[in-house]
Length: 241
Image 1 (cartoon, rainbow, N blue to C red):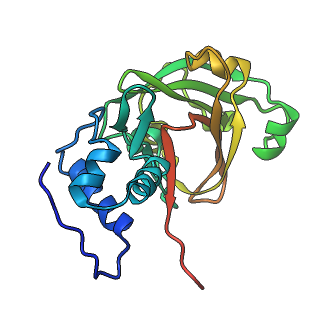
Image 2: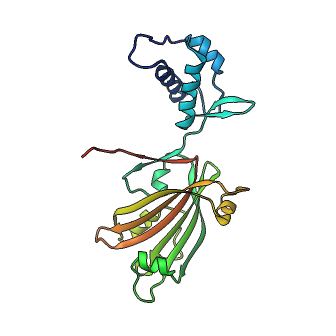
Image 3: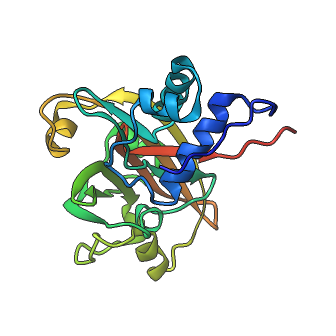
């Protein structure tokens, strides 16, 4: 590894300077995903800094999702979590377009709505809902489960290929989305979710609930998505008003 000298006269702390060097190595591909990085002792000697400073840097990069500590193996470069930028309204397909991602349709049918669904979708009397359940797969691994509920008035066809973008299917049917209300919360996976994700025991998950509205201010879809806790993250830019 090429040695770079840390500037002890800089206003930037030493741990921060080391963090930037490590990130540069990762971003440039010098340290690929899954590769082991130099040990804390090696980094300490190479940059002539304390073990505590190196450990602080490593802890920050682990918490930020760039590195992963594995017992008996050391510290490796972690595969980055899939990131959704808020407040952009995108479908799963649009979010994943730059990587190897797909959806497997588990269920598609018209069903009688629950009292909750009838209320939140503001359904007509005796109106059914189109229920679509899909497994989200990224690079061959089960990332999450997407449950979509659409009022029957939109006449979605059961013959449609729902492994593709649902938002694109909406547009094909002259249904244009404008905005959505979304909540994000943490939970533990249910027995069914654990099974579908191919796991042996429940894990922490991110639960995203989204209510989508058309350009005519009509409710189009309610979706509940659950994501593997360490494979997905959200990014939002905040402004002080």
